[in-house]
Image (cartoon, rainbow, N blue to C red; front, side):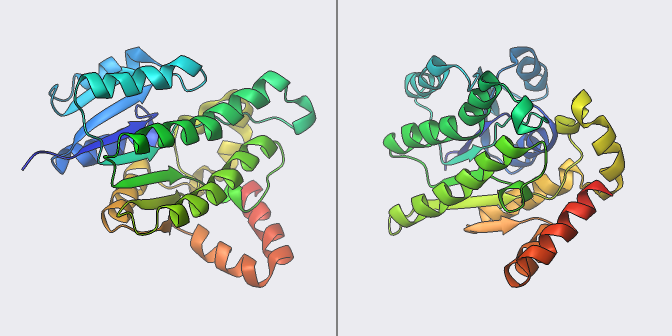
Amino acid sequence: MKNKTVLITGATSGIWESLVYKYIQEWYSVVATWRNINKLIELSKKFTKKEFIYLKCDLTLDHDIWSLIEFLKDQHIIIDILINNAWLGIFKSFMKTSKKEINTMLHTNLLWHLFLTKAILELNQVRNICFVSSLAWKVGFADLSVYSATKFAIEWFCDALREELRGSNIKVTIIRPWIVDTNFFDNTAFIDYANQIRHKMQTSNLVAGSIYGAIKKWYSEYTIGKDRYFLILQKILPKCMHRIILKLFIN
């Protein structure tokens, strides 16, 4: 029986590098994309060419996604699992965020996930499509207004797509990690914030294992860690829990 193949966008850092290791350990082949080719090359040295296939893909550039699809066709690569992970967070108030930055976040965090998903579905191969969300879809954080908006949109797109694909044997999964210790917080804009919450962060390996398990079990949605309890309580006491969640993140 042939190895199954998983396509992971934004696969060279934090959770997603850990997830690459996890899938390869489980005898999958991984197709990894990222905008930094040097990081992909460095990661590729740890695996065989059959285990790890990489391609530079900047999701802010229109032509890159079509180059990815053509690459998959030319190499006769069948994608069994698509993990839409690539995202961008700019930590600024809405009024200080430029139109260019807004456009970049909308393309990276939302539009290209939709375009890539549509293109992969048209290949008529995939059996599981995974989207990565966060607590930001449910609670709007100051200075992350556009980022939160993109996560909210992904959540509802995922729900709608799941309904459209009902009965097709294609599973749509939404994953919501808790705050994770990754290079997302290495940006200078996050330094003070990251130092305040570092002790509350989950490790990349822990989150990667949870994501692998949720996809393997064909969950429709999976919230990792404390998020699940906050989301349940917020349905019951929305205004109160909104304040509590914000307090936990900034204190």
